[in-house]
Image 1 (cartoon, rainbow, N blue to C red):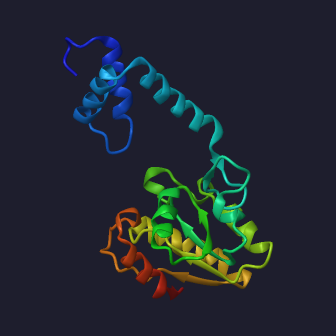
Image 2 (tube, rainbow, N blue to C red; image 1 turned 45 degrees about the vertical axis):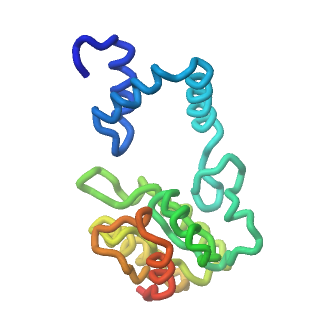
Length: 200
């Protein structure tokens, strides 16, 4: 920001710019917008940030974000708990749930294997997935990582660990361009990808 801006405004802009997808211009707009808000609105905003950070944690079963012991999907007895869809982020779960077609459960890895970025298998929630499968009752694991180099490598790595456990491991038949992201896919594309998944 320009040198004539107040230091607290500069600091606020820099904090907004740390968020993914937010450049300095957008960050500056957000900072100026905060300045135009009522004090009570700013307090509510700050409280919402703090409350989310304090109360939201990983589901004890699937590693999704929740404020309960188990997330709503894991708690839902009507879901097919014999099928697990493995995704990269909680945002991907939201994408599948929008289809209204998938009735199984999920497991969130919270990232993809990427040695160049220093992300190794132990940095992901792979061990808890293996424990779920080893506990029994799982028939199929669907690898639903994005169709990128990292996504494919992660799917291949996890599938190699799962196959000796006697479960079917499948990969989405992506109707997406290579390099596409699940969170931006429409419901029909995701449904077709689920429907036409391949055994790997």
